[in-house]
Image 1 (cartoon, rainbow, N blue to C red):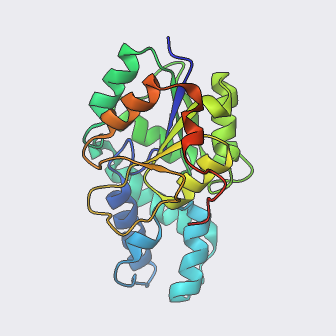
Image 2: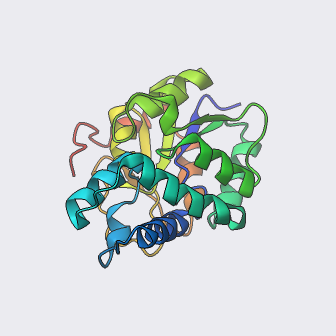
Length: 231
């Protein structure tokens, strides 16, 4: 059994759900009399529901309360969540973790109701699975608290954790927690510039990067300067 653990973001990383998040948001806002600006989806990757609501207030003058926004979006999202699929390459990664007996956890900026719906849809919800939702912490990503909580629940030191993220807020959170971070953007997200301390993986081949880290000495995380998490 490896002495490492892998902590996965959920939306856009394990589950191909970013598109549904945006579609549900757009549908809810349309029903409330609002429309979204072009390319708004690119701006909300990795953001919590509350942060999205705040951005909507600034961007389109959205005036309805957070509770109304959440209720509308979640209603649309949950109605379609059963059709969600795992992101391409995830099956290979899960096989690798099984073969190396590497524990893993799910760390999401989404609320628990969405986390559970996603995990059920892609057949990843099972007894003993460690998952951290936005409801389980005081501060969500980019704060390190969600990743530190997952490490605590797994009983693994943060320095022995490998984070897999598709977003900048998540990568910043993992680095701030003192963990090794793999940036794994979705193939079409060539616009994302991860912090310099993150290790970039091929959007179509996460397993190679992860296998290299799992077989390397634990202090491999020092080969990059992890003090700069600003870019």
